[in-house]
Image 1: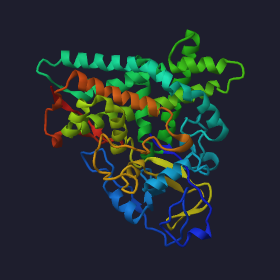
Image 2: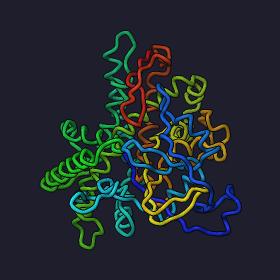
Image 3: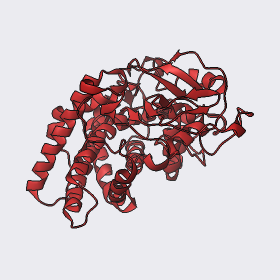
Image 4: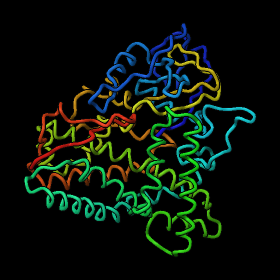
Length: 432
């Protein structure tokens, strides 16, 4: 999914003398402009982050790059800068359907903003209402249900594998996030051929034309509105859509029906493919780090810490977070003008040696672990805790049920799905 955001700071004379001075926000230092580069590519057969970010962090922490859709943007690769960019109140998120901007007759009709794009009072109002759905009490309610789904999928996998070998992706990793999404949000599983193609299109939005992006957004928005009409006729329920609809009807509610439509679209964009591919990458990583896997099996209480490290170590996405500057500012010597795209890269930030000791080493006991996999600041991913619960459950149930699981082929022969920026194994042959 392309995340559209902005970065802005005033030029301050006091900061121009020390290009490396730390700052609470985005710092200001002048120097010669940088040449245009290509966005670093992920190495084949890996989830990333691209190795080239190590050099960029050291030599070009802010550099102008050619984006996949033909636009240009400033890549931000250091942890401190990425974290500051996400949290800076002077940064806004333009609509996915309105960037890059068009003028006159070429300007597209507006789509409803997703939760990722809402700003100001609207964002605060909706976030206040939605956050309790992802709080501790709700997750305690969902935990046993997610575990039951995982156990059912493993039962089916084992029953269909008399030789004790199977493809973990098709049998377990791919269906689990969709079942969780349908159960929590209230999406009909039988409608998956209607909504999944559009969600997969939007994951590649940074490389698509505006017409393709808009077509997918409008289709998802129409589907969500039609689904909500069905839910309105059904009456009460325990899924998120029913709960939000009930809230929207309450006198004095801060939530509108359009906000519920936006919620469904947001969950479709963020809740399926990203979780599926990150889970596949996490299981591949554990299976290729047998010492770490064995420690987790011996100390299952460490699953929470392990999940945070898997989120840091494996990108949820690579360079697809786009911000747009509201005003001129400079950062590490680069003069960024109002309207320029700025691209903070969490995948690079989470491997910054200034923030994490030995960052390229997987350490399932790493603590503290203040990664930025879910962003930072007011737009920190609302569903982050649900993602954590889903990943922890998927790992725990697999290791409990199949403690002897291992790759059935050499790691280097595992085929990869490299059709979107979210790279992951296409198949994961295992035996137990």
